[in-house]
Length: 229
Image 1 (cartoon, helix red, strand yellow):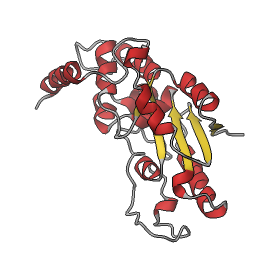
Image 2: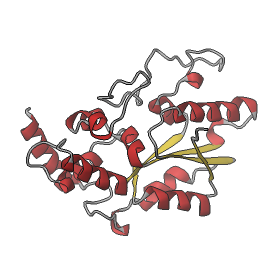
Image 3: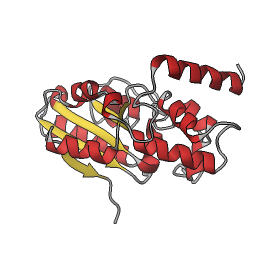
Image 4: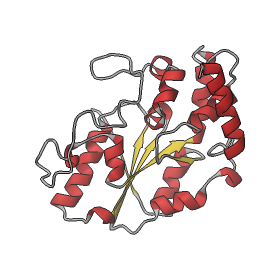
C-alpha cells in the first residue's frame, strides 16, 4: 500500500471509529474518555506519583525505573499498590507516538530530537527494550525487568501513559508549517492521524497541565519531574 492509499485508509478509519479526544483544536468534554482516565489512574494504591516530562530528556525513564524499583524493594510497597503516571507534553509528547508517526512526519527532524550520541531519532526507540530483558526475580540483575527503562516494560510494571491532545494539535501545525507533512495534508488531518496512531495503552487527555492538576487535586498524586543543575 502506498502512502496516499494508507492515508486515505487512515482517514476512513478515523471517521468510522472516532479520533481519540476528537478533532477539535480544543478537546471537548464529550470527546474525553473520562471514565477510562478514572479507571487507569484511580486504581487502589498506597502511593501515587505523576511524572511530568516537557523538555525531551529520556533520562526520565531511568528515574521512573529507579522509583518503581526502590518503592518495591527498598520501601516494601507491593507492585500492585504503586500508582504511577507519565505525563509528557511539549516535545516529550513524541514518546507516545507509534513508529509510523515518527517516520511519516519525520518527528526527529521536525523537532530536533536526538539520541545520546547526537544522531537524529527516526523511530520510537524508547518503546521497546533494546536488549533481551528477562523476567528475572533478582533486581540486581542488569538483565531483569527491574533495570529496564523501556516504556513497554514500565507499562507492564504499572506505569500509565498519557498523551496531551493540545500538544498533538500544536505539533501538527508545526509539522505542516515546517514542511514535514505529506503533500496535501493540513494540520487537522495530521493531528487526527497522530491521535489514531499512538503507542499501545496511551490515553488522550484534553491538556496535560489540566490533567496534572486533576491528578494532584482529585486523585492525590505527588508531582515529580526531571531537573538538571
